[in-house]
Amino acid sequence: MCFNYVYGYLGDPSLPPNYFSSGCYYCVETICAPCGVVIAWTKFAHSESTTNILNFLASVYPTQDSWPDYICIDKACQVLATAVINGSWEVWKHTSQFIVDAYHYINHHLQDYLCWTYCNPAPANNVAPNLVIVEYDSNGQPYSHWAFNTQVCKQLNAWLGGYQSIAKWITPENFNWFIHVMLFYHTKYTIKKQQKKQSNQETEDGDIGCDEETETEEEEGSDEE
Image 1 (cartoon, one colour):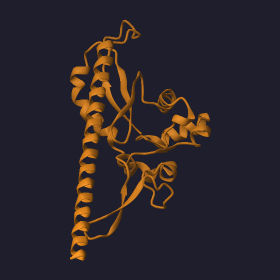
Image 2: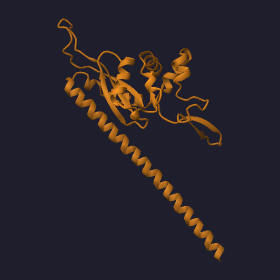
Image 3: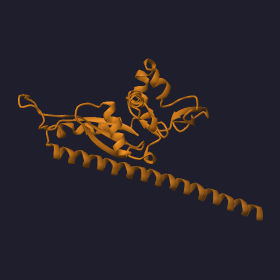
Image 4: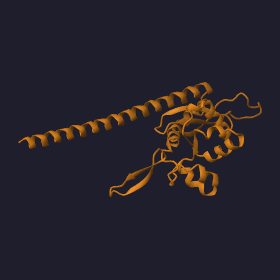
């Protein structure tokens, strides 16, 4: 699960009358599955603070049974530190682990002991076998590979950011409707793409099974002769 943000400028009646500018929310925050399906979204009014992120998580996953195994976000080490300080980590630690996405981990893990020790998205010591898988190159040599796409929300952000000029000046009600509809269609497209991929894979597997069955029948026929 990952987070993502895109700026959206909305009218805010709470601004003082002498503030000559349109009000704005700081960002739109989304929760996505590794396949790209959008699970939830919300708006942060002033900042993408770690406290806001933890509150958003608690609202989307209210029970311990619903908590994800891994929570991937660019500032996971900061979120983890806040959770430890406010005590919520005593609950989260039984089911979930905060990890940094691959791009941001490379940028700051050497300077952050907490990040390097607890938020590694691809540990090489087999402590998280669900995050790292072994694949083989064309020469048959094994190599480690990320099991999940940790950049899925950044990719969604790049796509959604293309509509920023539209969302920038519309009313709050229209903004909410616009973002919700766009994320709905994105999720619908992603699910359809996954279903098509699975269908093609099943077709290929079915063809292999038929070929094997045909070869077996031919071998049996040869034995009888």
